[in-house]
Image (cartoon, rainbow, N blue to C red; front, side, top):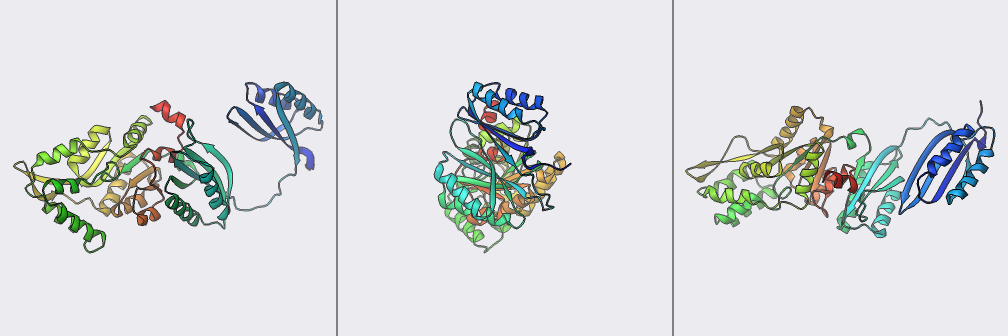
Length: 397
């Protein structure tokens, strides 16, 4: 049976929100035998917008009834006949979500985001506010045509965030795994905590400058991570272990770290620290925050002092990635369901193995290589990347 051009009608309702609007109008459509093809409703600041795409029966009398009902309800109603979509076998556009997080997003930031999306051929389907007490986080749902390169869009959004430096923005493929993450793995030094433990120990032992020089050489590729760690740890020989334990008992948490771990635990996520730092600090954080797993380097102790050596395999970049994979398998969790967060070059392999790799307040090189980055906000920004709303976060405390 052929479809007439006027069979498909888009009904748009706007006005002050109140209970019963949707029920009254859909009741009339149901009684008339109309077929519902699509629907969407949003309430913003007490004003409702309801869109109903319907296929009408032979009788058009229901449109007059809808207009009378809208007048009684105190809302505006408009309708428009739509042509049936052409039956074209084209590849379905890819769906992505852009998440923007800031202390306060304004029209300037939204304009910049929309402009970058338009420049890369991304069509905005929907914008959802995640925070409710203030405009601090938005989800922008977009579709990309097959000829659009997501990586180019990601780089453009990253450059925008780095230029502005007042908000974070992430691009994620929309799908089942975005909303079904089950484990978050974090680096420790300069990620979960605000300091580098080895630097603090070096200063306490009077070898801060020597350790810093070795770190600098490693950063410039003049020695590998394992050798740089051995040389730096060797300089700590003779340090009273009481210094290490006092430091571990008073580690300064990164902004948002406690909120992130608390919410993840209440939602049933598994959490882990995988660090190139030291086990005394990692285990202290594990106990303090209730983290499920902690892996890091073990400093050898003898007679209450550090020997200047480590015990067991060094937790380097490769080891971090291996531990993430092993831990996911142990927990029965797919890698696509894992989030990894880190700040340094030795976190890159770990971030690459995870379903979502996040560079946290990292150098530009790691930010560009990671799936997304956080620089303006705290660690609790990760919660918005999971699609959680402000109201939901309040519910879990």
